[in-house]
Image (cartoon, rainbow, N blue to C red):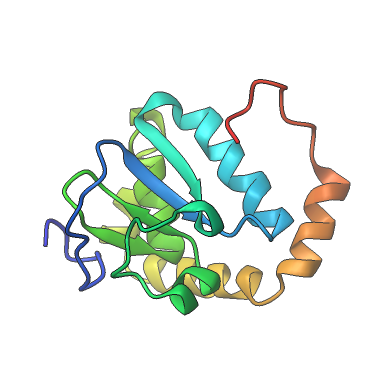
Length: 142
């Protein structure tokens, strides 16, 4: 495993580009996956778990529905807050949260708690996001 915070699963067919797997049936998940793809750029591919086909069969469907997952080009897999921070770290300007996740005492636990809070209340989070958000540009990755 390339990182101590990766899950114990390893995908056999590692993607050519780092990939973020999200639930396209969740408005909150879709909005934020697209937003992160815009901010991170070409280094990140976003894939709706409903459209992943036969890719990443080692990651259980139930797990994919519970949390966002990030798969790097080596085949390592992260989920939840770790996935968000790891994906963001593809851009140098967004590396600080990933560093904090790994090295600042309590930050990992607080991040995962916050992630679970939002994930368990996705309907409310989705409504808040719709109420607060600005529209994505027409050329946003889908």
